[in-house]
Length: 72
Image (cartoon, rainbow, N blue to C red; front, side, top):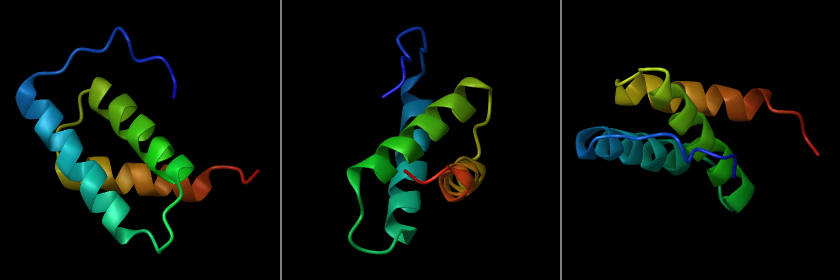
């Protein structure tokens, strides 16, 4: 996980980010790999840090970034 130690979010924003992560993970086909969940979470944290507060946008951006990420 990347370093987000300087990030600070209100309880409301944490709730939005949690909803976005849960919705994004629910769309992934089984089995869901922990690396995918980590990538989604990092994207949501980064996007929320930039000021995005819409759950659908947080979810959409995270899924797009996961799709575009290079495969190992």
